[in-house]
Image 1 (tube, rainbow, N blue to C red):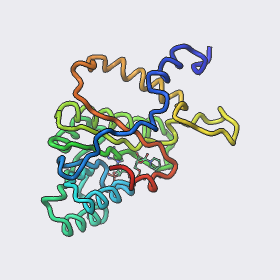
Image 2 (cartoon, helix red, strand yellow):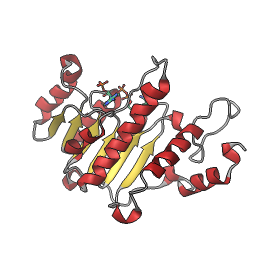
Image 3 (cartoon, rainbow, N blue to C red):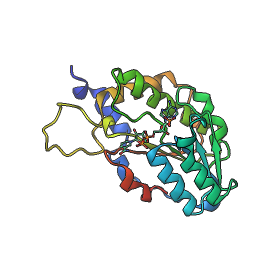
Amino acid sequence: MAIADSAAWHATLEAMGNAPGKQRCRDALTPGAGPVCVTGASGFIALHLVKQLLEKGYTVVATVRSTRDARKMQPLMDLQIKFGSDKLRIVGGVDCMKRDTFVPAVDGCVGVFHTASPFHFNSQDPLNDLVLPAEQGTLGCLEACLKVGTVKRVIITSSFAAMFNPGGYPWDYTYSSKDWNKIHILMIKESSQNQSQHTDTDTPKLSLRKLHGTSLLHQIAHLT
Ligand SMILES: NC(=O)c1ccc[n+]([C@@H]2O[C@H](COP(=O)([O-])OP(=O)(O)OC[C@H]3O[C@@H](n4cnc5c(N)ncnc54)[C@H](OP(=O)(O)O)[C@@H]3O)[C@@H](O)[C@H]2O)c1
């Protein structure tokens, strides 16, 4: 039987909510609520995010995988000079493939924007080069948020690839929040079975938001 026809598939979709994209946060995060962390801050989206958050008055913890590449670090350093090191702290060594490296960065933060993930089309082995770090990084980030206990909201920049089923629909099909890539669903199910020790009762309140985009930049202004 095809996965899409199975009762388990429909139950999983149901459990995700009818229209998760339409849910709204009840309490907005304000600059006064506490610092926010942006992961992958050497990246395109994260750098815009860090800048906009600082301009709105937030205190930001920006993570990078490595601080060694001066050219990559320059835009962040410029922001640190402009806004001050008390408003922008840069944490190096946060690597998706080393899950516990997220803890010192998110500790004390109330919000986390998780964007760190490889985003390129140069891979011969996309499962290992792209999907694995995306999955490990997201798990590492969420585990860290649960561990430190200060984080109230996590926003993850996902991808349209998480909804796309190549060849599965006509070209003019309108995707909605009911569409999920079948590999994505299976990985989530497998991962949640492996992580079954996290029950509702030992999980602090944490609101989770995922953005799926082929072009996410226009959404940045609405993130906070
Ligand atoms: N741009 C878009 O239109 C778009 C559309 C859909 C989804 N997205 C998603 O949005 C996120 C950011 O996209 P972007 O366009 O800003 O990409 P980007 O400019 O390539 O930035 C990616 C960031 O992730 C970091 N990274 C990669 N692998 C890592 C690892 N193993 N550990 C820690 N950090 C790692 C990179 O750090 P290094 O500098 O160390 O490599 C970089 O800071 C990605 O998750 C992407 O899938 C973007």
